[in-house]
Length: 140
Image 1 (spheres, rainbow, N blue to C red):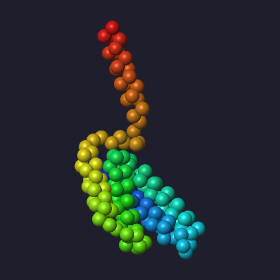
Image 2: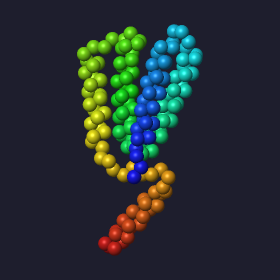
Image 3: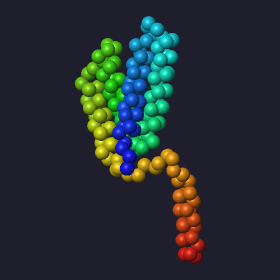
Image 4: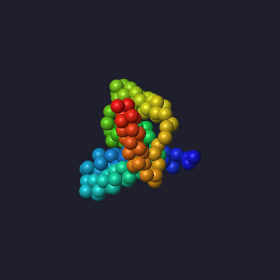
């Protein structure tokens, strides 16, 4: 069985690209809006590209929970520390709950079979349909 480490690496790269791109969007508006928006688009495109690589072997629900959860938590922290936005107890509690939810989605997802994108599984649906048809004809 192959290791999923590279896919987790893609996921965390994706989170980094998304957080950086979103942070640049806000920071660049006063000084260099055109360059900032261009850089934001490139970073967000890289975020989606690396996310698409991560979900080749990671469950989509887990990958998306981490991508959104950690991304939102990091963007909120960066906006508080670097962009002058305020942190209050409700925001802090929400971030804690978000991270707990992300962890729970990961732990609640069984280490099941994730289809290999290189294998053709199109025939399996037809085989199931044929088996169901055979059973229904035999029961008449």
